[in-house]
Length: 236
Image (spheres, rainbow, N blue to C red):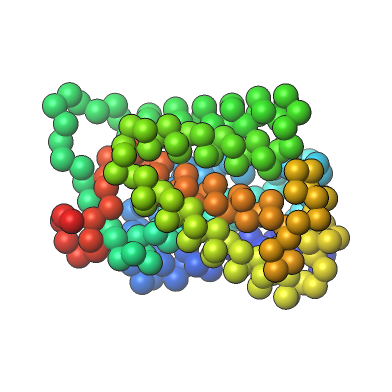
């Protein structure tokens, strides 16, 4: 298949589409995370062709550094990585109790963390860290810092990471079944985990799913001031 990344990105949109239809209460969260994810599409210039070398529609990765596929991928990933914990554990966003001092505007908080995470990942790559590990390290470090400020997000973050990685792995397995040999042809050999795979999927990708799930569960709750309560109620 010529456009493997387009297929993978399309597969990643499916879980979010199902969640969007099944859980209307999570739609605002999904909209916010879709918007917050867009800057990460431009990080393709760090991955291509260092980490992998797929073919892009209209050769956009060679022209501008990222493609339509990247936008679809980050939106799809944000859709399920930010909600899979809430869906599986039957949780819903519940506004936190008002604090004494006025909070910084949510989107300003979100933009600051996104900018710092992107800068940290770029700095790690510049220092010689392989790009995928730089991305996972940045996501994990900033999510851990946010958990330090919001201890109630520790368990949701860890479970969200595991659930997201499991779903990520499942989508990659479907992808590999539809395009046999795609990981061997298109992905570069792992630097830190050479030749290591889980059911044929590079462990690097599973690590990325873990990092995305941790950040996707913790970040919006911290930025937009909500906690995870029981679905259909306003409290625990």
